[in-house]
Image 1: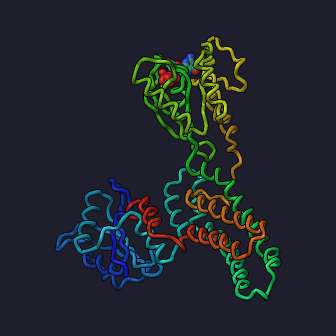
Image 2: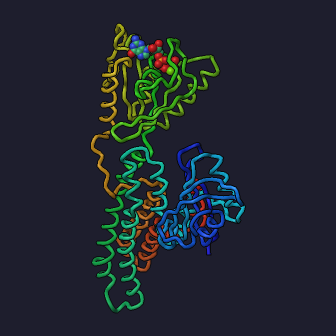
Image 3: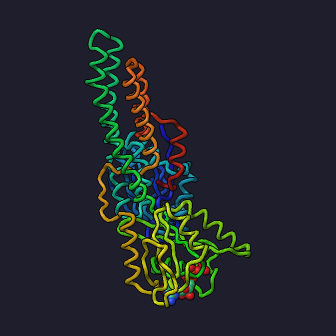
Length: 448
Ligand SMILES: Nc1nc2c(ncn2[C@@H]2O[C@H](COP(=O)(O)OP(=O)(O)OP(=O)(O)O)[C@@H](O)[C@H]2O)c(=O)[nH]1
Ligand SMILES: [Mg+2]
């Protein structure tokens, strides 16, 4: 039997309403002890009751109390939600009173963990709860809600069923070898199912890169020599004066970050210190950081100045970024031309001061990243843990194929298939160890 837990489910800042949530055997009776109004223990499931939270004779707040009775609740236990006024003080006060009644403060993610342990949702859905909360675009939200509704679970269950049937056939053969020949099992059962599963998993893994981009955004770095207008470019894209812009070279010393939403894809943009040979230590450190960022970025915006000629550093930067996904911008088009563009194949000439140019820049980025026609369906899976488990599963299936090709006995093939099946079970949480659960739910917010 689970003890009763409590947590504040809403953000702790002065708000219109806060929600304090309880789950467990005594959830209703504990709240009833500090409630003045109709007896909560007699209230129906899925009801809301008006009244007051009291401490002794003292009224603490006027509240609405929602009651969900097991098993029809988020955790499959009795759940109570107190809607109180959204002051930080009053919310904490009600929490304290409940704690003093021997209700335990919930750990991060404990409500969702209970929903999982009590079998209301599987691990992919539990993870999707977090993904919904963290979603920042329509696309990432669509992927997360699809997982929350159980689409990932259904897909994995489907894979597991197919694999289980194959394994069952093999095991029958091991017990009753006279029943069907090994060759027939390989041709009629193992080969068709394994290759079908591999195809489907491959499709998911191929889409995973896009899914990851949709979920996490694209790390993008603006680089170039000092004073070419990198910070101006960031500000123009953000439509906000976030980075400091001056006419002096070496203005940006530390990185400045911003996010933009381009057609449903988030670009996590970093403005960097201008790259030059310098004796100034602070600036040198900034430049070193820039090089690290260069490695991590998936899109580089390399900026040159239209009014100055290219020098050694510019050529070096062109060289350094040539194998990266990059966009070359030649800025300050409004000034007199001094740049020689013969060394640059593809670039966008613009001025950060012109809104029309910034729109052109956005379209060019979309073109480079091919983010025009992203349509998400339920084969998009963005969760890193699920993806890595699917990779593992694919490898076991690949081993099984190799074993078949080497004409190894089917009980050897079966070992790989069993491992593949176990990996799928880890995705949904049917075969999962306590450590993974701990790790996963500790990422959650309190009260979730
Ligand atoms: N004429 C003109 N000036 C620009 C344009 N874009 C930026 N500038 C000016 O160029 C100067 C440098 O701009 P910043 O954005 O600070 O350049 P930066 O590349 O971030 O420079 P550091 O941080 O020093 O590396 C400022 O005076 C800007 O106003 C442009 O399109 N045309
Ligand atoms: Mg700058």
